[in-house]
Image (tube, rainbow, N blue to C red; front, side, top):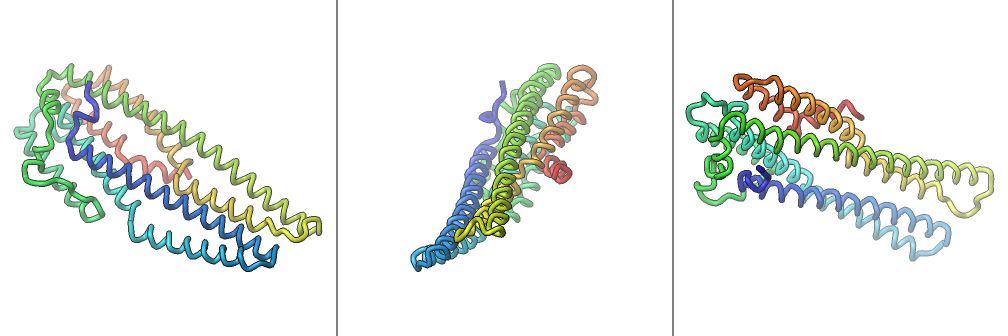
Length: 294
């Protein structure tokens, strides 16, 4: 069974870096939203209690929110996350195509390792321009140096063996991954939609009660509105609905393609079928589909 451990070492480092930067990006934005909500609460208390202490706390919290915004801009965690995720997925896709004679690495190519190096380094040069950090030291880790023994071993196997490995360890694994992620995104979208709807309803109720003179002193409308806006902002950041739509479509397309590659695709059409499969699982394809799922 071929796993991520058998892929190029550069995939491992780029994948780990992407996970770390993604976590940092979400954590800082989540903190900023909580700080803004706390600042709004302090401002409301300052008005209600006519006290300087909550007003000072509100000012400090708003200043902290600005500082967090500057920190986000300086760290560029989201940019680094996306650049390293793109590098990791590029390496993974090229590695699988190389292993199973897919895409440009078909059986007739005379120098597959040289082609692997050419394709890889050309794409990585582009990613360096947008924030990808190359951790490699020395020429031995570049180009063909990223081809692992497992990759060479799989490439040397007969077509039927390579086909079964790809269908099981790549296509089926990706299909199940997209299915899980679509389910997770669907549940998260439902949860956050319910939360924001409830907070909006509470804001409306507070506004009506205050207008009727039944809620004296406490202006909860602003607090609930800020909380609802924070919930909407979090949903937009996590892209729950677009990802539900995109991942569901990719999972369906992979299922259809896997059946075709199992039953009807011959060796002569194998390289093109693999290229199509890799296109379906590319982050760019998911992002494109996500634009229609908003």
